[in-house]
Length: 405
Image 1 (cartoon, rainbow, N blue to C red):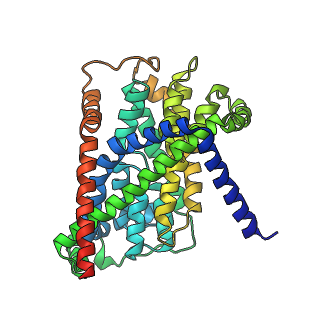
Image 2: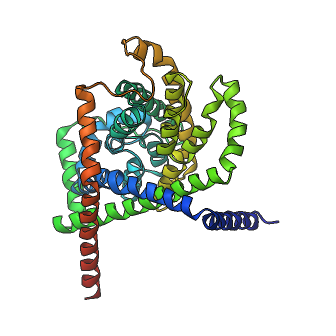
Image 3: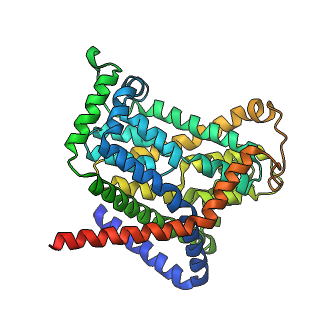
């Protein structure tokens, strides 16, 4: 039988199974949908939207090109990508996934990256933002702000290592910058001006396009968050998660990891928030093992985030497979880094290991500002989302009226 026919049958069977499970478990699916929607509504949308809009404007105004010229001597030798990759890397760490993929795809569409360079760049610029690592995971789930330091070091150092490894991806030769153009502010300003002149859109049009493009991307992200939240829940109730977990227990036994982590690990492969939360609730295990599992989950980023990235990359010629391989490498490296630095960093700095459900230290300044940010999003996130969606509808309606005229 033709492979395409087999693929069609498999996809049809999966879709049918998913539809049947929705009918069989309507309440569980509804609860999972509400959970995914709440996370997108309160946290994801209001926290990512400013980064997306600012990024689009910086690209349009030529600031990214300016930064790229200055960072070219750093990014080329290390990662074999243009200097604009430094901007993508920084924005990816600050705003979290899938910002790196969105910016990489945007630069690829502008021909500032080749196909291979884009595949290298997207492999190490998608990461969790510090707010999620410190606020949601270390404080929200583990009630231990010191754990966030370990998770952050493992996560970002692992991404750096992935970037160094992926520099060997592809057969393109490293571009050599002429001596006359090495790290020159004057050259960078000329590049900024050329980019701005090339983009002939007025400021109002540029801002409107940035808003609509960013909100469209966030709507897509919200759909994937809800979808995979439901899939994860249904797999658990259909006992499929348990079957896969039985196989994972054997691997964990070989790796000397407690087998009780199998179900949280499987859940984390689909959705990082649920996986991290379930890992924090595992009893009678050391905090080090919990940190290792969470580090892998954060680095692998879950099929939910990977589906978001795949959807963004689908508009370009950037292949998804190198990104997926990089996520496996990132998860493995992050777990190993957590194991290696646990004693010298966590225990060596006299961090008092507390149980997973202990209360955070009162008066810790590092905790207070993170908690205040989370509280702000919980209180005002939905309002920001409503206002931005209303603005999007107005801009979209105005564009359609002008187009019809």
